[in-house]
Length: 117
Image (cartoon, rainbow, N blue to C red; front, side, top):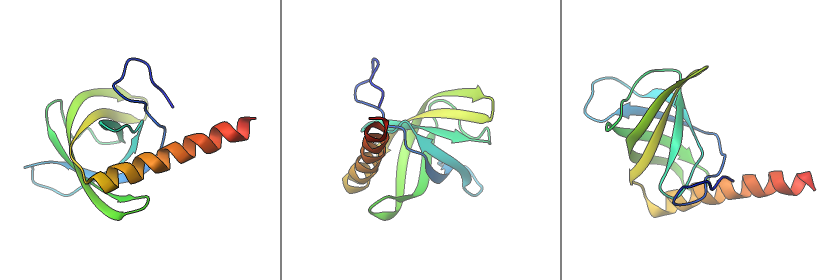
């Protein structure tokens, strides 16, 4: 779990997803969400699809709810060694999906902390 100067804690959870820029032609590109919080997450991808202020449509399998769709806005984008990272702020997300993801991320963090003792 990471807090720093953020509005809410971030939890490390790798959650595979597909995404695309809303309004653009083409299919979904594969990626993975991490650093999940109540407000957003980091999207890791090999493709340079999406820029700051773009609206992103995500499709994923939520830990408790199954197939889910989330809409977010790209707040920042940076090149990393293995592709790209995009900082997303959630705009449209079912509350049950959001809390299911947060619960799974918290549980994964708790399990890692408990095994260190």
